[in-house]
Amino acid sequence: MSANIALEEIVGKLLDLSKRKPLRERDHSKAKELMIKLKEMGFINQQISELTDGGWSESTVKVNTRGTVVRNPGPKENAMKLITQLVNMDLTLEDVGSSVSMKEDLDAKGLVFEDLTSLLKETKKNKVDPKDLIQLDKDLKESKLTFPQLKEAISYKSELKKAGLTLEGIKKIHQTSKTYGGYDEVLGAINAYGSLVSIEAEINKKTPTKKSLEKQVGDLDSKIENLEGKKEQIEGALKLHKELEDLGFDKATLQELKKSSENYGKVKEVLAMVNTYTNLAELKTKVEELQNEKKEVDTEGNEVEHSWK
Image (cartoon, rainbow, N blue to C red):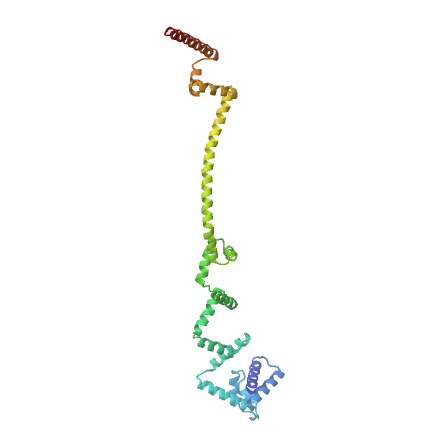
C-alpha cells in the first residue's frame, strides 16, 4: 500500500470515528493511534483537526498526541506537493472532489480515465465535437433508443450501402411494395425472374398474348351476342309453335297450310282468306262453287274455240 493511500485511509478512519457518539474506549484508543500517526508524519494539531473537518478539536488532538515526534514526513510532503500542483494548475479542492466523484462513477461503470481520453482523441481525429456526442446521448434517451440498437442500425445502413441501396431508394421500394402486396410479393417476383430487366422482358413478351386474348374475348362476346339473338328468335318460334298446337294446329296441319300457301300465295293471304269464312263447311261450299264456275268457264271457252275453227 502506497504512502498516499495510507494517509487517506488514516484520515478516513479518523473522520469515521469522530462521528461515533458516544465513543467506546476501544474506538477512542484507535482514534488516538491514528492521530499519533498523523503527528509522526509532521502534521501539527491544527492541521490534523482541519483534516478531520473539525471532527476532532485542536485541543483534543494535542492531549492525545502529547510527546509525539516526527518520524515519517514523506506522506505530508507528498500531500503538500500535491496541493502545490493543484494551486499551480489553478484547481481547487472542489475540483479534486469532483474528479474523485467522477473516478468513483467510472469505477462503478467499469471504466477508467484512459477510456475517456481515448474517446476524446478519436473525436478529435474524426473532427467530431464532443458536444455532439453529448447531444447524441440526449437524443437517444429521448427517443428511447439504446446504443446497441444504434449500433445495429448503423450496421444495417452499412450493409445497405454495400448493396447499393440508399435511404431514399428504400423509401421508394416501401411505397412500391404497398402497390404490389408488400415486401414478400415484390421479393418473390424478383427471386422468380432474377432481375427487374427480365421482369420487364417477360411483361413485353406477354403483352401480345394479352392483346390476342383480349381480341378473342371480344370476338366471343360478339358471337355470344348473336347467339343470344338467335336464342330469342328460337324461343319466340317455340312459343308460337306451342300456341299453334294449343289452337289445334299440329305438324300435319301446318304442312298442309304451307302447301296451300305455295298454291294460293303467301301464308298470310291464305289465313286472311280463311278468316273470311266462319267455318270449314262454308269454306268447302265456296270452294265447290268456285270449282263449278271454273268448269263453266272452261266449257264456254272450249265452245268458243270450236266455233272459231
